[in-house]
Length: 109
Image (cartoon, rainbow, N blue to C red; front, side):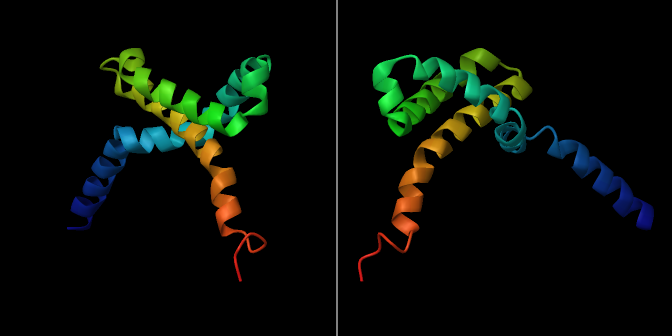
């Protein structure tokens, strides 16, 4: 009986690494910190994108999401990594808005 649970747990843990959503979150945590600064360096070379970082990050995230299927094709791992990087861009664009809404200094008494 206990070995059945052990086998089921081992099988489930192997399937976790095949799940596209989990791979995308891992990519946002592990791959994105290496990729995002390189893309931001390119965006800082253009004056209008340099002065509007949140909007630019959001648009870059949407652009990467839109091409994620064509970049990865049927390869789940590559597609999940691209989606994770795009999600990190969108998250970095939305964090300033979220923090301004939740900070106590901007709250109306």
